Each structure stands twice: as C-alpha cells, then as structure tokens.
Length: 286
Length: 224
Figure 1 (cartoon, one colour):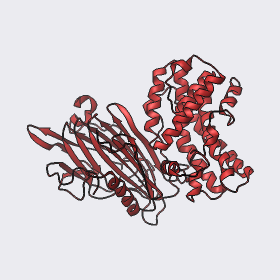
Figure 2 (cartoon, chains in turn purple, orange):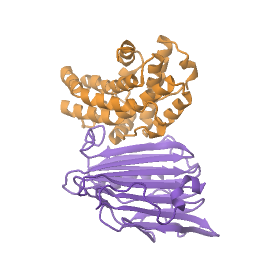
Figure 3 (cartoon, rainbow over the protein chains, first blue to last red):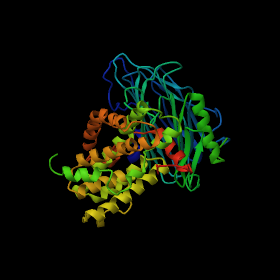
Figure 4 (cartoon, each protein chain N blue to C red):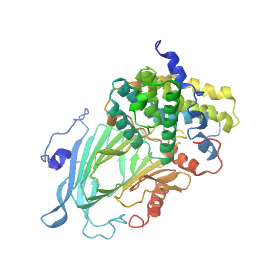
C-alpha cells in the first residue's frame, strides 16, 4: 500500500526530479518526511530528508497545536527555509507520509516569501501527502506571501485513509506591506478513501482575471482556508458558523469542516481562522 | 453551431421553467454587504464569477454532456462527486442540487428521453445541464456555453431588482464580457472527455462566504 500510493516515500535519496527547471539559475529540490510507529516506538521520524528550500528539523511544540496539544509523544517537524524564495523557475517538492496510527505535527519556522526570478518562469511547489489509517497529520504552515511580480504555484495533493485525522490551515497573502499583489495559485485536492472531498484552486493576483471581484477576493490581501477531518466526530453535522462578515466555517460532511476567510491582512485572517477552530470545541479549540 | 442552435436557445433561456430566475448568484448578499454598489462593481462581480464558478460549471457541463453522448453514465456520478468536492459551501451545494433537480424535472416534462430513466436522480446543476444538453442532441461545447450564460444571466437580471441601475448598463456589462465568455467556454469544451479528477476547481472564497450569510438571512428577495 505504501509503495503503491506513495512512491516518493520509498524512493532513493537522489531520485531524479520530476521536471527540471528551464532556467539554469533556478533550483530543483525535493524533501521528504515520514512518521511511523515502528518496533514498538510511537511516532518515530523514519525519514527526514532536507534539500534546498526545505530544511526539516525535529522540534518541540512551538505554540498551540490543535488536537495534538500537550501530546508529548507526537512526532514534530518544523520546516525552515534553507534558501530565499521560492524564486521564479524553482521546482520544489515535499513529500509527507504518516504511517498507520502515527501522529505528526508539521509546522514552519517562518512565512514563505515567493519572489519573481530572473527568467519570468513560474515557481512551483508540490506537496504530496499520505495519511494512513488511524494516523493524524496536523499541518500548520506559516503564511505564503506573494511578493510583487512573483508567479508562484502550489499543488497540494492529500490522500487520507478512511480513519485518518487531518488538519490543514493555509494563509495566503498577496503583496508585502504596502506592496502590489504578486500572483499565486494554490490548488488543494484532498481525497479520502479514494473519493474526492475537497478540491479548490485559489488564484490570486492580476495574472488571474477576476481575482479582485466581489465574488472572489475583492482586492483583499489575505485569504485563508482550513480543512479539518476528524473521523466519526460529528464536528461537521449541520455546521454553518458565520464568523464576522468574511469568514465561515461549514460542515462538508458529518466529520469534515472547512473554513473560508477573506481579510484585510494576515493578523485579521489569523484571528478569523482561530475563531473557526474555537467554535469546534476541544480538542480543536484553544 | 448551425445544428441544434434552437435547442440550445431553449435550454439556456431564463424563461425555461427550471427555477433559475429565483437566484441572484450571490449578488443580493454582495450588495447587502456593500461589496457591489455600482455598475463597475457589477462588472467586476460578473468577471470573477465567470472566471471561477462559471468556468468550473462550464467544464462540468461539457464533461457531463460528453459522458452522456458516449454512454459513459458511470462517469456522470463521478463528475457529480467531483463537482461537490469543488463546492465547499453547503448553501451552494443545496442550490446546485435544487436547480439540477428542477432542470431534470423540466426536461422530463418537455422532452422525454431514455437517459432520464438511467441517470442518478440527484445531480448538481452543471452536471444536469450537460445531461440535458445531451438529451437535446447538443454538443459539449453547447453545454459549456449554455451553463456559462446562465451563470451570468442570473445576477445580471437580478441586479435591476436589487439596485438602482439602468437595465441597459447591466446588459452593457454583459456585452463587454462576451469575448471572455467565448474563451472560457472554448476552454471548458476541451474537458468533454477528460478524466473527471482533472477538471478545473477554481475557488471563489467570497461566493462561499456570502452564500452562507445569505442562507441565514430571514428577509431576502432571491433564493441565493
């Protein structure tokens, strides 16, 4: 199952990149983390491969961790930036595997700043995630900031087993303070037990006609999403939380909650998403 | 396009008794929340709707039409699941299901077809629209154009009831979008035989947000 569904988790340390960058100055890097219960040891980091942008470090709790808060035994990995960027033309990937019954909290040390390169090429980061039966992944990346003139894409492919638990919180900021928006497309596709439960490609920046529409992001600089899958929990049943004018937390299924938030800046966005979690109650709330 | 033009006009006409006229496509709530105040705002509203929800609906209608024409009915259910995954708002899911059901009911009444017995009873609107197009011997390209047209005509017609604007201005906004709509429909038609998982999934976060707020309003003119 592991080999079939997640070939990258077992690939050699120097597997060739999927697509080489066109620009000689651009970077190709692939990193991977696996967390498994092996030989009676819980949540062991069985693979931790850093390269380029992605420097992976086992860490201690950084702040409040929904669901895993206070769980000393959870696997914890922080991603820190080994290089600037991503820069236009970069091709980066991070593979995440959480084995049956294991718990991994994956966070970041700092925000990601996507910058334009010299070539005008798009930068692409591909995340491939597999969470097996009874496993938990709490994934709390820091905001992705699209600097002026950047063209960045993130493809996030998540495959969940039927009994996997999952939290993904994503915050996109277009333009630094007082800066014109850069371009970012973030495509998140989540498949659970081989059925699609969430598939959204959010595109922000002037490259994407209509992004500034009152029906899309209306020139707001910060857009966030959150997806919470908690099998058999009932957190999603009849849920339609209206949080301020621009944030909602809704049930996609009895045990799946999704939040959409549009805000003026990163701080307001972060507070809005916190409030979505607070409405869910323990163990998701602070 | 000569073949089937009359059928396409029949299917896309707002006067078809399939309930589309009761929906503003989120415009009523966007106006209430102060996001749309004049005709320029309306045009931006329509542009964003076309490039996100409209482009997704058009691709799903084309793919559903292609699946029905190719007698790949198992793909119709897969398309319906994929469309639902691209519609996170429960309020919008309900709207889509309702419009899908009403369209299939209208088709059963006005144009009996063997597909009606073989299709799932519950289909999202763009998927039902593609199936209805196939029942009328239309092509995937027609299905994409028709559903895109409907996606924009709802709010463009609703605006004159919701805001003090000149109906000519509302239609001018639509006319200016024609080249964009042609491009979007053309792109959408290329998905006629595509793997359902690869269809576009362009997100419109404010549409999701206002749809939930609208559903909670006690006094409203339009159903969505």
